[in-house]
Length: 236
Length: 129
Image 1 (cartoon, each protein chain N blue to C red):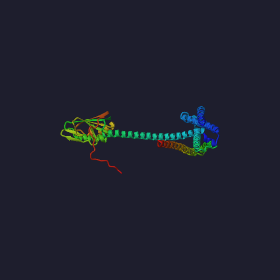
Image 2: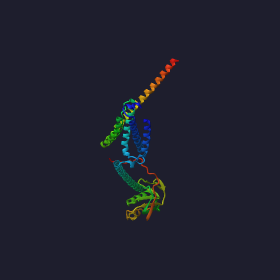
Image 3: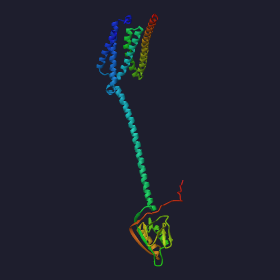
């Protein structure tokens, strides 16, 4: 206590220290309380300008996010479009596939057409040449599908005489030979019955009967269609 | 006398501080700077007391003047968009460490002196025996 007496009165020092302690401790406690409670009541303790800046911050962020959202939506639409395109393309390819399958002969088909039955005559039996002529003429008349005794006639089908029977698509068949053809039934029957050139009129050594039907059913080709030697020419 | 004043002041200050209303969070930054400045003044006062050149006027003016000045500077810094309060904190805390070092050295010296005296006394007693 002696050292204070050099420059200042001890009572004055005591009073000052007292006041200083009050101020310091009270202010520190206030500060502690605010710092502790700010997390809970953050917005209520803020000033208007701070709230304003916060608001503008959130606004800019909102704008950013909304633009992002718009971008993403656009992208999703694009993806949907491409998906639709792909689906359309797939449908188109599917249609083409079924069509070409029908054309090639890989499916069971039905439609209006004619049924020509050939059986051996009194002086001659049915030869492969008869069948070939008939198939040729049917094709000339615009037949879309032809079968002989249930064997589908394709582009590569062979019709050959072997002994007393005939091979069609390497399958042995015997008479009577039922040739079915799908196509314009009136046109085909007219062509076949033409005087002087039609099959029914010109072929007299065997029995030929022609029937026009509204529903002719032709089965599909049973074997495998394999391409071994030919290749597609790619034009550049 | 002074210690009683300190203890009483702390108790009264604590009561006032607990019962005071909450201050806005945005003002608490200024208050924190003021507290740092005041603490700096307090440690400076203790250090100067130990050095035996304590001046009441300097202490009081430093205590309140530094606090108010730091608050004003912080306010100015916010208006200028410069973090002046960082400089204030650096200065005040640096000075606080300086003063604490002075206080520490003072008491360390005192302690070592005491020990040496004791040793000397013991040595004298030993020689006497």
